[in-house]
Figure 1 (cartoon, protein in one colour):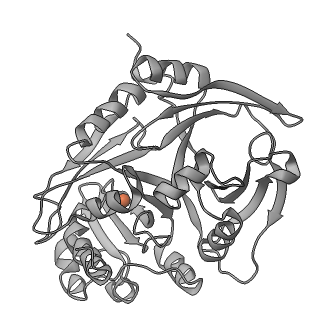
Figure 2: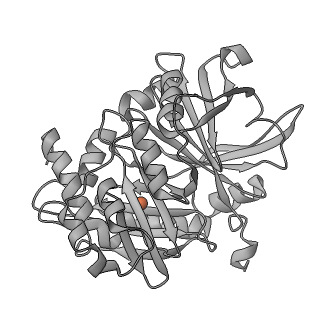
Length: 368
Ligand code: FE2
């Protein structure tokens, strides 16, 4: 029996997130101007790729790929038609893509693409893909010191937008999936079996419910708490759960939010707001009770109140977080901005305050 450290999916990290979108050229401009990414590589007709255009954006250790189909009826176009803009691939860096793929498939993962090697003058990359919830996939990426700007087939196109402020986003903290009624345990087991993950934490509908909405959640993680996958399922409430609203508009399971880390959330939020990013509101009363709930923190409560930043504490420390509004017209994918100060929390103490805010938005859309 292999120990956890010998598991081919033990020593992993985030590789990149690939979004399938209706218009990658314009989406790339949005993520650069609003979220401070630089466009560093491109693949499309000009580079010999006939069916799609992909823009590779980076910021510190964050790596996004925005891809659009150039055709009316291929898998990318169909994905966008059905789901709207969304995250197709939560790609994971592995030491050995073939071994990781073999282990995952042997443990029951559905194959999407068998291991394939691609190379150019910068070296070689081996990738394989497996399916997860909905139509989302995990590519397993072995870079072997590849020196090109992204993957073979991409050319360097360095471009940053001078007018926008750099928010200092550093890396992905966690990536959350919404799955259907009663499917949370199945997908939690999937990550335990195929990735060798363990459960970090779980919440039930008693923790996460307001008068109207409810959900259940469990967080699966690698042993170093680097790659964390919370999984949500809707629970019965008086009115429609926000998870159900997502499932309706995304037409199935998919990535609900990506939590992006920063080392100074106040400066980050100021920059993002300057760039035009919209965040969820939090009721003012939240701040009246904050210090009593989380105790002394480094940041002045007034600065958090002005920016609507949330705080939660566990036995290891505390964390600050705030959620954007949906990133596209469908109320589906959004970002969380998070600064951890020792805490491994996912914001359980904030769920109530947060959901009141989300329900207010649902009410405005007439979907509560
Ligand atoms: Fe989160």
